[in-house]
Image (cartoon, rainbow, N blue to C red; front, top):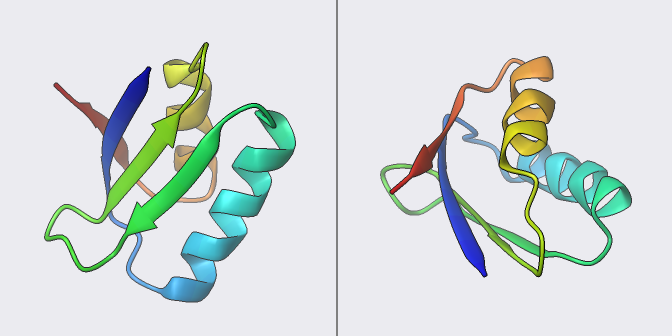
Length: 69
């Protein structure tokens, strides 16, 4: 399963911190950012993807995040 999120993350260093935090919480998922994309895409691949928890984690770091459908 793959979920794609639109974010407002702009800096590579911040993206790396977010990926590390997400991988700690959801170790079974492959998590990447595409900061070159206009939507600053966060892509999460895995068996069970906790969409709401991912959104809350980003929002707790002051980065709005919405799922792309």
